[in-house]
Length: 329
Image 1 (cartoon, one colour):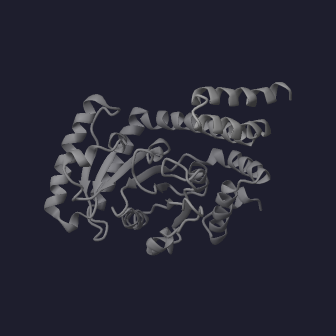
Image 2 (tube, rainbow, N blue to C red):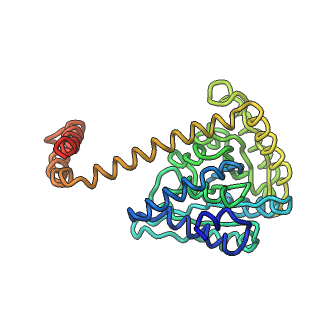
Image 3 (cartoon, helix red, strand yellow):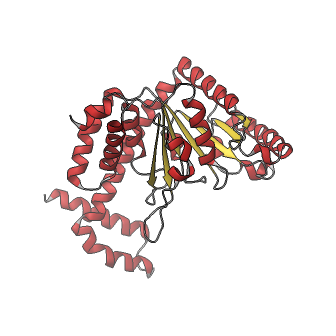
């Protein structure tokens, strides 16, 4: 039986092994594996798109893994199958990653109705691994109706998850500071729902944070991308309180988006963005690997560093050398 056939079959231990094998194939950089991965995705594509894609982000220490495990167990009890694609930071020196999410989500990882795949970010900006989108399609084809993407952290570069999910959830701490501190990061403008996690540590502080963030988000509603400001909720993942209210807000958002056609429009735009992102990535790699560019690069770089050549001029010379290789091919 082919890998695609096993993925599309009923849930089983063999299917779980096939999911892991498929994602490993997608993450491979070998050209022959890339061709196999493309063929697999083409075969699986008609069976994807039926899940709800939920992005979870937040500062380190906000309790993302604890929240996702509590939410996953909550959803499984209600008949869902949950896939979690958790991206761990890679070392800037060795390139390795701890990949500890299966340890942090021990109870969820042991349930056969859940699948957790930790992957190294490998330096990819946006807080997600390079092949996260493709791994998401594999999980959808395997019948997981909720796919959760957990990012490595939050910040100006950690926003790509909003561009590949149906709903983007930002976790905040109850003692995050005043409204200026809480709102200053650009990710706030992207959030469809803000959750004050660890509210049990200080209910008063969580309530203040909820009011401050809610007030600030209403200002974004007048000038930003959203017609209405997102909800702000309090949750204690450790005590599993507030999860029903959280999922009710998610379900309401999902229904509104489906009714207005916004969900389909968002996914079509995301697919187009994904195509262009892959084109740009492929061109960058071809440019870097071109022998003519590699031959000229040290000299050009030295001239830029010594102030003898403007960076824009250097870039134009390298691009011209790269394009010349195609003219003579």
